[in-house]
Image (cartoon, rainbow over all chains, first blue to last red; front, side):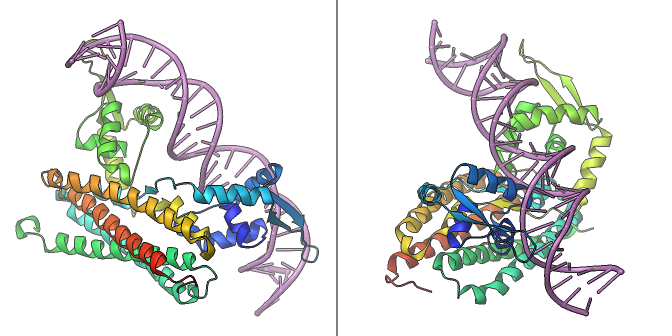
Length: 172
Length: 172
DNA sequence: GGTCACATGTAAAGTGTTACATGATTCC
DNA sequence: GGAATCATGTAACACTTTACATGTGACC
């Protein structure tokens, strides 16, 4: 991820973190605790090169891809991707809830929908600006997120309705 | 997750692992390296109780929820869920690929589609049997997975077509 | 006898988050 | 002066995977 970010343009660790938070966060997050040690390691391995580039008296290190780093990045970009990994606590809770705990299931579905709508809203807000992005694939990826969240949204609504409209005897 | 599984029925660590692999794996996975130590910890904390239940000379430990464990489980089931976490390497690669690397982007999309179709196929295979599951929510969760994967499938196809049909100049 | 599924576990390595610490600059 | 942002970093902890180790039982 760091190599990919640095191919877009040379950046400091702080800027990489910002870029992640503004772009890949939804499908690939990273914290300072990962980024700074990793920058050192990548430099030790000769894949990137750091250069002091202070702003006033505020120290700052801007990293650039080395030719070797670009090589490694390109090879990685061509390898088939690892299967996606997901950790979805909401679904897990739903899975464990029994038919006699419909109230709780409904509440969980509503929580999930709130979260999902919020995320979808954020992506949709970004979309107009993303049309100006230099690389078409970045817009593509954003739209994949929008499509997936919209599907989840639809499913959540349907599930909620099914629980709400369910047979009378279960309703009490 | 362990508490939830044990509420369905008392199980050994081995059986819990099997249950996870057959059900929640797509949105919540677990390895033996997590399960066995965790079973010990949960027993130490009094949330579950293990009992030797050998099959022949093959030792085996079956764990049951204690009242305290059930209490903790119910409280957890009612807490609002943590936001889902995703790690999707394929999207990350796509994100970093430039418009002049369309061949690679296409290959990655195809890899993703193969993976996605395979996963979707597995879920759809399960679906008929899942209608007989004791809890409606389990079927609900399965269908959420099917819906999400179908959405991704559609998006992947569309993205592939756009890349294939697009003129050499970048297409927005 | 060999292979596979049953069954439990540990050690090491790898991955990742959180909280903290430090200091500069900008803006109100 | 105080708060927010820029900027870098570490330490502790939590989490997870992988590989290995051990032994039983069923089936061919």
